[in-house]
Length: 343
Image (cartoon, rainbow, N blue to C red):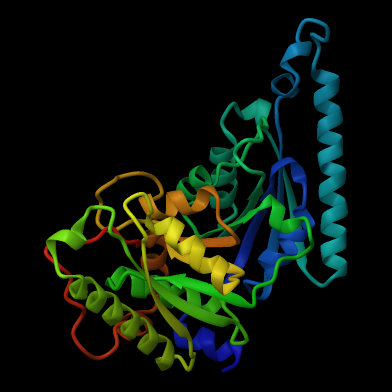
């Protein structure tokens, strides 16, 4: 099935306006090339860099260097030069690219809020970010959880280490589902950004963190997971897409869904993990969601997360696509107390 056919089956196009931002500007061009793999034909990439307050970078020099204006001008010039070089390289490679420089000292807000405002003002439908591990500190640090909560659109997060070896692959995509209609709608919304040449694997994680295995028969949870995977596979089959499925379980009381999902991604050598932003049920009301929040902290590969409001807005513009979401047959029957799964 060709990409246009996949897009037609999903009822909307892939991403067309992509904001790309890297902490410290490192790997900006590489991230832009990777994000463009998820773009529709003719999609535009907007390269964003944030100039932070130089006094925050060198607090020990406050007394010896009281005037930071020259340092700020130098940082602004370096950022503009980097953006111009990256955009020139992308345009030469056939990628439509724009640039934007955000002056953090003038706005007095955090990096996630600034990036979210820039994405909304430009009407972006995807924000791609990269950041070093949390132990690294930077004045304009991109916290993936905060960016996902601030942008209101899908976020593609790529760990900084994944960009070091060049443009990451997008050949193997792992999609997390939980059997709910929201999960199926997220799966439907994700299809246009996935090429027909991509190998897909749909997973369902049985979580034993609440000791539900002691209260209910284990077969009850397994049956619910199998039904969820069957519905997801049927949805993909209707679009002419074949996929693998896997039922994964947490190993012990200290294990959780994000860890199980990461293990499966490593075992299957996934290039991208796709999941929704909200956890089910709302046992922990965190932003952007208990499962997604944990998964965003230390993913083994690139992570593409979809907020439910964005999914509903996109599919709501295409009623025919939304009506075709659920395959024939009743929805799966879950236990009276739901195991904490993902979307």
